[in-house]
Amino acid sequence: MSIDVAFLERALATAREAAGAAAEVLRHYWRREVQVELKADATPVTVADREAETAIRSVLRAAFPDHAIHGEELGRDGTGDCLWLVDPLDGTKSFVRRTPFFSTQIALMQRGALVAGVSCAPVYGETMWARAGGGAFLDGERVRVAETRELAQASLSIGNVKTLTAGPRWQALGALIRASNRIRGYGDFCHYHLLARGGLDLVIESDVNILDIAALAVIVREAGGTFTDLDGGAPTLDTTSVLAGVPAIHAEALRRFARTT
Image (cartoon, rainbow, N blue to C red):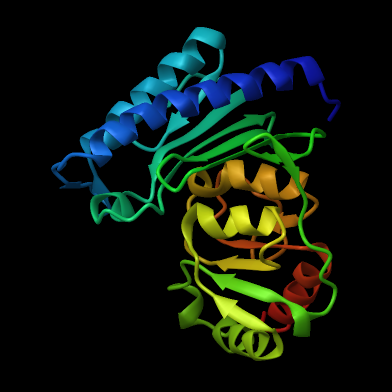
């Protein structure tokens, strides 16, 4: 797919503006007690989630009225080649428990390809962004993944892996951990940010939603990393797992997981 740089720069600037609008909402409610409701899938939602998504949609609609939007709280509307993927408050459980590991995730998918993304963690204090062909940035400074080539020197982070524990890949994960240098469990946006800026070498998750990781996929990729599902496939609207890492370590992990299928 050819890259329209001017369009992507405008889209990225709009996504950053939208993330900033959401951040104002989240900071407001972060200082206050909020009522928690349970959605049909038993995940929590608050007024902060809904108002943040409304703020994001307002910015996106003003700039791109013909684009479709798929949001975590308000669903999908619109059709066409350009689809915005929005999770206004990824990490609601952290938010309501007063821990700073939550973020706003905004990504643009164009004709099925992820082309721009913003990951804003307003209380944690980091914003990362990227667009296809333009590199990845942390608060304005360009970042790159590490150059780690040996699994024995690699740092791994494990996120949501409940499904993985029930299958043959659980044993493969254990062997991968034993062969690595160290294991962590940063979770949510945090371990992807660390990966993109060279602080980690591999992230593994088996239970995610595309809205959680679409923007992060663009960021990791533009930082020089490899971002796939656990089978090595590129992210799609149906993606539910992640294997993301520096190229050499990702390739080794993918080989190990492939032996279990």
